[in-house]
Image (cartoon, rainbow, N blue to C red):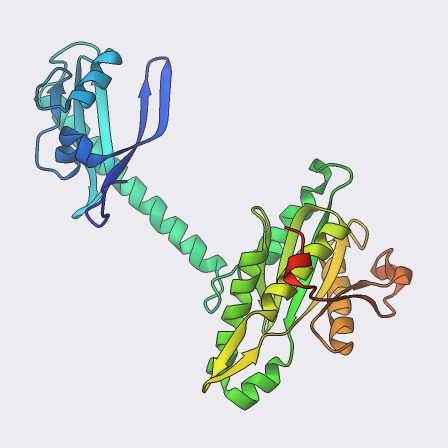
Length: 319
């Protein structure tokens, strides 16, 4: 929506006209002076389409759409412009004082509805967001995993779902040696690495403490291993600075695949968790998946993990 805080104010319009619907039409307010006047509340909203106060392009657009007259009111919350409500008529001089009063009431109610929707969305995001890292929190990422598992049947038969648990190696020692502020910075840097590694549609959240959960839809085991390698590669070029000392960021990753390793959230997290600890026992900085004897799922028992390796050279990682 248009706003005085933008360097180049612009307005998003959703307009309905008989037989046509224009959604998310965006144009700069400076090129539409009457619209700008209405949005900023400096002019009454009733106009005929051929009013010379319209900019030429503005006037031509209205006439081409067979608009005879219009009545526009700003949607505002206090001094903040939220948008504009516009009524169109095919004949000239279609709107009177009563029309203006009715639309003013509608505009007030619409502005309240928009503001309430924004507040609701802000509260929802706050409830789902980890305060330190800005990622999904424990509850939200688990619910996202449940939804992703429910949708596996809708993906292509060859595709699966990958669950990766990512742990910051030596995190307790980092806190004990360098302090919790540096530990917090390490967690935020890990979150940044994970954000930079995911595809559109993937989920990433802070599972708890220094452990993160990454969910990748429509991916096979080889693709998931490459994704984990990308995470490790980005981590190797990320350092956390403490008193002028560059501390390397080292991660261990456990990988589980659905439906291969289970179909329920608890089973997949358990498999990925066991694999993650196998990677840590191997020295950290690795990605590990279940060993062959446990690949059928948690019911067969997990007797260790198959270490897939550490981060390859950046040039060798597939995009």
